[in-house]
Image 1: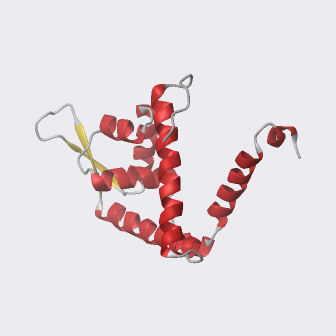
Image 2 (image 1 turned 90 degrees about the vertical axis):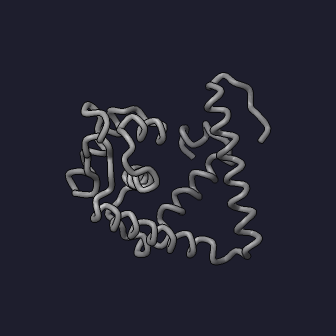
Length: 156
């Protein structure tokens, strides 16, 4: 065991190994030209067409310069378009292009196949339990993060 891996708990090591395996599962089913970061942008724009760059950054919990780079990359691919705001000439709105919508739908389908392959060995009840526990863990981590790094751990 390396010194970096021994500095974390066995549970953390197991979690890292599991997430690495998760990324490798069913690679042919997830053939997608969309990175997870770009998919997050496409997903946000799909749900909130016409949002501003600031809204996108805030919604993704990222800094505006980081999101601006991603939007520019997606624009270069023809998947996102900026349009002037109809009531504020200084503001721009972001939209998926028809090609961007098609790529987004392909990526969703690929991730759906991955999800189905991953959970195929579980009963519907076990699937629900796994998802409920993951949701609870994420909610607790998000709450601690929102409270700041020095906040005491909250029970979910």
